[in-house]
Length: 138
Image (cartoon, rainbow, N blue to C red; front, side, top):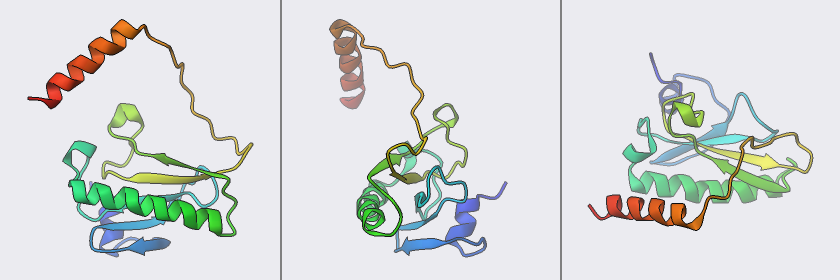
């Protein structure tokens, strides 16, 4: 199956673009959570965050920071901004070309995060931190 974001990058698919440079492109989401919801996408196709070139990733987040301010300064209502990146199907990734959502937020906009946040014991947190550190040090 062809990647819709690759088709946007090459100009084969229509988009309402915001910005592009040699590494990334930004455009309006066609199924926005809120008005002004946009995406930041690397031009090189990678499916998952671990495969993303660190410089492309840095450019994605630097651009998201600038776009967040542009949304606040535009006529689109934005009292806050959410950044969201889904990596993997269980994390709600539905297009397997990594992308960063920039979502303008207003009080009462109806967007929620559904999660049952728990407060684990410190021993468990320490053990998990040690496990992750061990992987990093390999």
